[in-house]
Image (cartoon, rainbow, N blue to C red; front, side, top):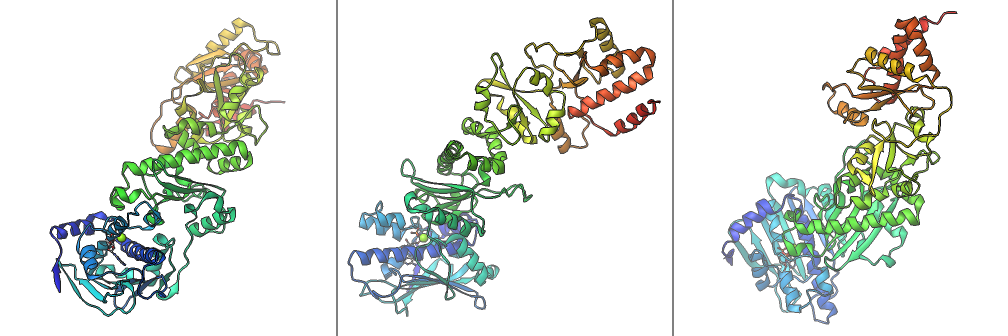
Length: 611
Ligand code: ADP
Ligand code: MG
């Protein structure tokens, strides 16, 4: 018998085929999901004592392909379909037999309801994305049923005729269109099954070979999973032999039903130079993958994490593929981020060693989050750790601990940026802070200064760079050594300013900051040195304006005293020395644009050294 699809079906079919799904390959997932549902229903009926055909037939799912014929098929030994069911379920779009089945049982919230995947009644039609001829051979579990064959060539009609299937269940054969013959390749098909269907509950075969499937550990209770199982699952998923650094597993019922298992991987892929990675926490609904790299689930900074988020509430909303931007997905994401951040924060207290390992590997992502993820920033900034002048090398402090050690009257949190500890400690800026016993955070990564300037403050304490010109420091204990008299100092400053020129130094003064170094260039420019470096990296062609600096000299330094003396005797030499001093300071400040000029000048100075 031939039947017309019900009204508007054609139109809806077009939508399903052309726009609902973005990936053609998901037709495999939909067929396997339906096979799994059919098996689940049968198991349920069997358990409830109903008499069924072929009671001994094993519940398994057989997938097959034939690249010569260009066909793919999926066979199950589940409930099968009667003629009426074929008409309703495959003849009507957006009619879900699964939903009707549950409604009839009034069990949509019960155990079976949790297990059945289908709800929309559109998944089956995804086969028409890749095929223009589909055959369904089916035989219902009902003892009185006859084998039937449903077929459709993609037109507005489908046909139901007598079939030949001898056992209970359904086999769906998809004849691929010319452009999609790739799906009849065994390896291609296998990778699709690995991707979407490894967690189905029934044994899964491909061309007779049993595929490795995995228990969906994230759906189990936390107390039922051993650490080895968590690790094994991670390794299976990531195809790796390396264990993860850590994981957090949780579930919730209200307001959204959710099971999540989020891992911290052992290595930072971006550090290895693989470029920016995509979100790797897959979105699942009842064990079936919806999206391996969902874009709107988690904030960008969490892209290093891997794992699974599974919500049974997802399909109730709208179709699977087009729901990525739905509010529900971001709501789910927010719950996951909160739990994850809380877990890491607990770790900082309970297992500081593991915590610091995670921070060593992924600290930059947390920094990025603190700076960019407005919603979670208050929690994330508490997780940041830096070395400091008060701690030995390798030890790190949180902002909270820094604040608890602040001096009476100290209003800001001070920081220094440099590629490493030695460089920061040998620059002149630290002296003033050392002399006053004020702690300074050491920042080693270019992103650090960006993060702190973005945060602005912690707990009301402003972040300030120690090379900034407008830092207000309390009076230092009187520095040792005799100082150059005040008048000499003033005229020396005038002279320096006239020699260097106003475009290079905004101000020259005798400072109170320095105790050992002869001079320091303080940043008086709104663009701080590390921003300047970043701008240079991004646009090497751009001409940046000369940085504004305040040149501070140390009136107790022998170099400065000598400079003051030679400038009246041999001004040419004095200028050479001054230029050198200035370049040295600019170098320490990270502001020297072309250090090459220093080398030839040093030679000229050395030439003047005569026995
Ligand atoms: P959904 O799975 O969301 O209900 P589908 O379009 O995937 O929607 O399938 C429509 C209906 O067809 C299913 O609800 C089910 O009743 C029926 N069906 C599909 N495949 C099978 C199968 N292999 N065995 C039994 N019934 C099936
Ligand atoms: Mg389905």
